Image (cartoon, rainbow, N blue to C red; front, side, top):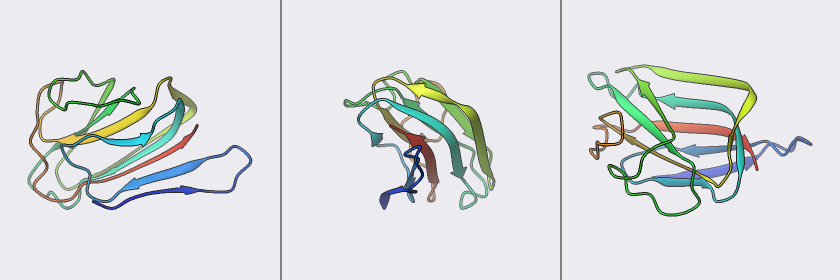
Length: 123
């Protein structure tokens, strides 16, 4: 797993978080309040498997499969999905993300191949 956060130098404070191998262990994007402006999920390495990116409004620990996600985004097999949120989506506590093979709260199996998750946000 390779994680990075890059500040883009804009006066808005926009940052881009990237996880090149997002999987079934939730990764903290930011441990404070954040506003999401864009999400990109690249599932092209999984040609035969749909995957689900789960987003959690928390600065604390997440138990994937038990903790209820605040948002779940399905990404079809072999595709990339980009969501642009011009007015922003607020996460008041923090932001964590995990990717698994089943939607909803349940599901704890990691994708078969790498899923890349990028989140553009301010905090």
